[in-house]
Amino acid sequence: MKKVFGLFGYPVHHSMSPIMQEAAFSDCDIMANYHAFLVKPEQLKEAVKSIRALQLGGVNVTIPHKVAVMEYLDEVDEEARQIGAVNTIVNRNGRLIGYNTDGRGYLESLLELTETVVGKNVAIIGAGGAARAVATVLINAQVSQLVIANRTVLKAEALLQRLPNGNTVTEVMSIAELEHTLHKFDIIINTTSVGMSPHADESPLSLTHLKENTVVSDLIYNPLQTKLLMEAEAMGALTLNGLGMFVNQGALSFEYWTEQKPNRQKMTDVVLKQLGGIRC
Ligand code: NAP
Image (cartoon, rainbow, N blue to C red; front, side):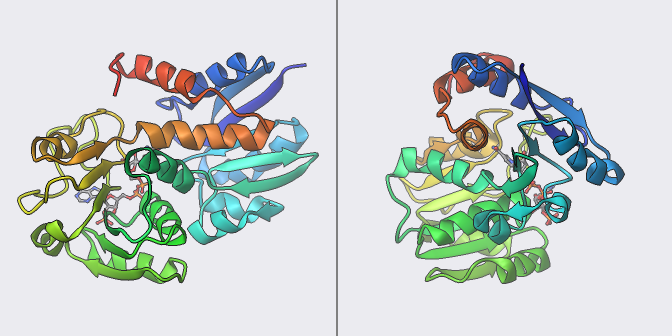
């Protein structure tokens, strides 16, 4: 019998997880389907119960359910607890366990470009859910300094309070302060939605003070090359889009569900094709 996996979100119609996960299942010769389920916030509790009732193998969880879903699970893994959000649920014989693969998915893509993040000075733009996942794994990976800069500074301060204690020196800045001190950072990461299609002509900050060879990274993958990344590349930066993070978080979810390693290149290729066939 085919196993069923899925995605709980609201909305979900835009998600590329179904084509990406089905490509991975097919490549591993696993008989499975992956459906996007439109789950309204008031239906989340019942939807989670249905994972047991329908014997789903597991699900991904996306906006707006990543935080709310935690209270309906039997167990939440330590890193997901630190991040304060779950994006992957595994059904182990009726016991529902929550994980978060967003942060590690991002870190794995970053490490393909930089080898190590230990001792690096990092600036994160944004203070939402994605920023918290990325900041948590970077602190756990022992970056030296982590600055959070956000349009709403109060939200950045609130995020800082919720990050794990580590040896990393953490600080909040306004976007303007970050712009003036950009040359002090080794890695700059945009976790805001500024620059995402259809607003691809926008950038979250000015790069005037960027130094050469800085890593500039954007979690956005539609478009693959945001205005921020184009400007950074023109100034001699090394750039990274959000496609690797998206594929890696999905691949890590797949590993939790199946205990097999999926073919990440195949997963990347189907998403790229869907995005318009451009290779990054
Ligand atoms: P979120 O929780 O809603 O946070 C949004 C962040 O963007 C906040 O810091 C917000 O600032 C900032 N922002 C929004 N509009 C802005 C504007 N016009 N000017 C300045 N700042 C603005 O969203 P999220 O879940 O963290 O997701 C953020 C981005 O990451 C999205 O683009 C999402 O697609 C991307 N993402 C990518 C992946 C991947 O796999 N590649 C995974 C997760 C998320 P305020 O606090 O001031 O409102």
